[in-house]
Image (cartoon, rainbow, N blue to C red; front, side):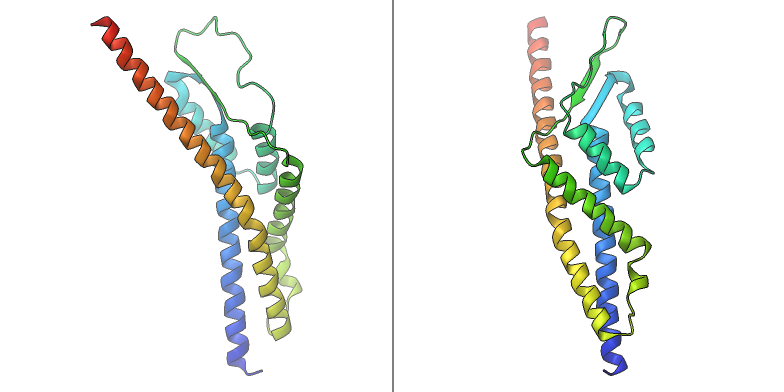
Length: 188
C-alpha cells in the first residue's frame, strides 16, 4: 500500500484516539459534577465554600475512584443528614440526590470496564499496534469505534441524571420564590 494511503489510515486512527480521549474526559467531568452536587449539606451562608471545597477535593481523583464514589453516593440508601441541628443558628440546607434502579450492577460493571479501557488507551494501547501496518491501523480504528459505542450510553445516562437534577433544582427555586412571596403578603 502506498505511503499516502497508510498516512490517511494513521490520521483516521489518531483522530479517533483524540475523540475517545475527549469523550472519556467528558464522562469524568460529568461524574465529578454529579458527585459534588448530589450530596450537599451545611449552613446556607457556607454553601459556596462547601461546594468549592468539594470541587477541590474531587478534582484530582482518578476515573476509577470517581466511578466508586459515584455509586457510593448516587446509588446509596443513606440520608443526607442524620445529625442534630440544635447548635445551628443559620439556615441549614441539605440536598441529597439518589437514583433508584434495577440495573445498578450492570451499569457499575459497564463503567468499571470503561475505566479499564480508558486506562489501556492512555497507558499502553498504542504500544501494541504497529501504525505502519494497514491491518493494525484498521484494527485500532475498529476498536476505537466500538469503544465509543460503549461509552455513549454511559455518557447519556449521566446526562439524564444531570437533567433530572436541574429540573428538581428549578422546581425547588420556584417553590422558594412562591413561599417568599406568600410570606411577604402575610406580613403586609
